[in-house]
Image 1 (cartoon, helix red, strand yellow):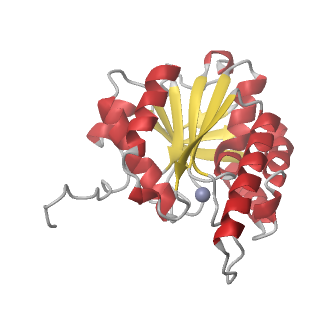
Image 2 (cartoon, rainbow, N blue to C red; image 1 turned 30 degrees about the horizontal axis):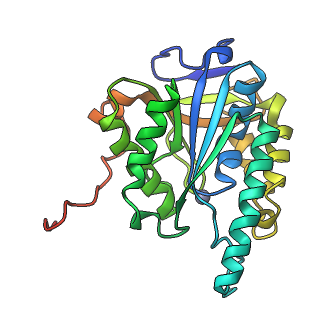
Length: 254
Ligand SMILES: [Zn+2]
């Protein structure tokens, strides 16, 4: 696996060690796993490592802008997107897929899901966790990060954290070259037919991969990450963005 980091290389995903990787990917909605880190997932699984994906929601509100869905439409879309997610993950070589039943668009209404993330981290004994970075534009992506942060605070050991970008480009410190798996990444996304019909994601994320490739020549395509340890994340050490605002405890005003 070809990669380049601008921060200290802690050995998490340097050349050739994909076989020892054991990772959990937190995906707020079906399709984030493919768009955010599908190439890296494929590199890990092709290399003999294991990746599980935990979906925070089934994406039941992923309709085209302007459409007003009925409750039945949402039920149908949730089932469709679950099946799309399972098929996309199969293409990426994912070992296990699970869904946490958060509400698409209102993930913050179920803060207790952070305990489900913690349980998954403990049970799976993962070496790494992938998650959207905290200032990604979609509210559910921000909430997923906050839930992970809370889960990591309860985890009794250190793991590697890989933050990925979807809606808002971040300041990365690590690039994974995905030239050889770019088509596999796009094929996995294409399985999310319900979403491919809503916005021109394919064109946009090919462009993002090419853009990120500029930062790790001679690669022509890359995925960008902010890579750190869970301890660094919890202590906000070496993090180039402000500590995100967390919800105040009940009864406390800010
Ligand atoms: Zn999403």
